[in-house]
Image (tube, rainbow, N blue to C red; front, side):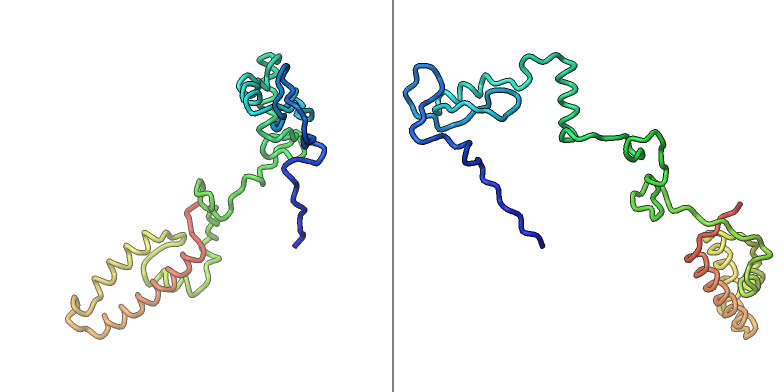
Length: 194
């Protein structure tokens, strides 16, 4: 880690020499407090406490400036007198780069991540095709549609509804496996129609 030198509150040449009198006319007090002479803030008056209070009460940084000059000065102060450019225009070029505003992870919450397009039905892996056929669903598929179809089939083939039928129980196990497979696939890659 780089150690930084601490700057003193006042540089040695800023300090009032010992015994310096107040800069106010006809004042015999010591000038212990500095006040700026002008807007440059590089040269200072040295006043006693009473006179520095009076000077500060009447000090106006913008004195002698017109409204347009004051506005320009205030605008420059918002960026610490450094040049700035509109958002997305690097170095002041006229081209806008939309990549700067992209939020692929949805951190800002304004927009969700862009969903991937669903491949056509012919490119669906065979294990998913079998699961879709078992549940009686078509590709592309949404999670709400999958959940609703699973609930219907689970109620229909549950052992309590079928009176303990072994074939219905085996079919329910297959439905559970197919639902789990499709649910995990949807969680990894959101599928949207279109």
